[in-house]
Length: 285
Length: 263
Image (cartoon, rainbow over all chains, first blue to last red; front, side, top):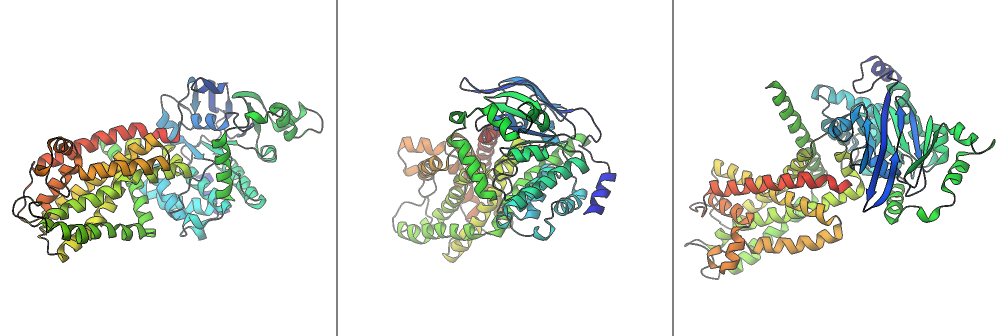
């Protein structure tokens, strides 16, 4: 695996602006309303190249809606954004070509084998036919799924499924990988493996990562910076250390979260959010 | 020019990606194909044999079973395709659909890929109906060009009704609602067509509905190509033009509506 990674590192990686200190995500007053109800409220967000950025906030804070807008699944109501160097509203296909997305729900198809899931992604992202086999082989080796490649994904464990989803969403070497609750429902061992793969993507391939999480330990251990979304507003942005220092000397990110959310349980998402989280946990757990 | 060829090649790759994935799923679990073989057998062996005793149902001097076989083939294709929307809603609920929607593939390529994969199911139905028809002594035309014509019609019919189903799925959005509306839609499409009786014996209002029903044109062309000595009422060319025009319109509508499934 190490030799292979080194070989890939030395090769040109189209789509990954290696060493680019520019912004991979830049939003300006990005907003979304449903029937007059503001869900994302004038969010100004800047995420730098090669950064691992965590978006945290209570259920119903607007995290998934913001992610859906940044992945072009949902058109903004107001504001604008550039993602991976392209205008979100005017160049959605170019945005989609340069990002990878691991949704909270199960995006791997259980009725296909691991290999077939990767083949499908390789074709959808127009990886040239001559390179497909090599890219699939690399992706399987990178995510340690080579031995399971011929098995139907429905027989994979939760951790293997997440690794497969990471593989299929990064095979086209995106500049940005967006992950919605990547470790929901995973046991600690599988969670640590996913963290290692996320770090590996950033360190070896220069991929910028935006992830949402409810696990403060995850945000603390994995993220260079964290943004706290509350009532659709991006309330605070900083390194985990900066955010904790703002509360007190021995504060944890849990304390920061509790201070921002302020016991606001009644706004904690709706039944759809709960269903989605529990289904994800069931599928990956 | 080279740029256009590259774009066409890329588009074909993306359509093929979606269709091939669906075919691979069928290969892993062909149970659906086997269970779907039962329905045309029941219609031909039970309904067909009994209704063959009723005089005047078949047009001209032909046997009713001969008249019925192309209608049952079209019906099998329709029934397989019309519940395709359930699979789309299921994919949305699972999360698999998000993966398609965040890919750079044009939405129309995703819709066409789904339609083509539905055609594979339709073609498997055709093999079953042909075997049954030959066993029942139906005057099947086995000319290679006519067989290819039947295959093309089945691809067209499957694509048309599966795309229609996708549009319904985009509107109703839940499996429960779809199951209800699927039943409501299937029966009128089937009975308000020339599949099991000629439109000449229909009352005027039903005949008018039948003439606006794409299944009528599919069955009409199938009768001409599938049976020896049968002719199309509207002309096979007209039938194909109607089917292609409606399919194109449905693909355009589905392309606009499909992304709403993940909003």
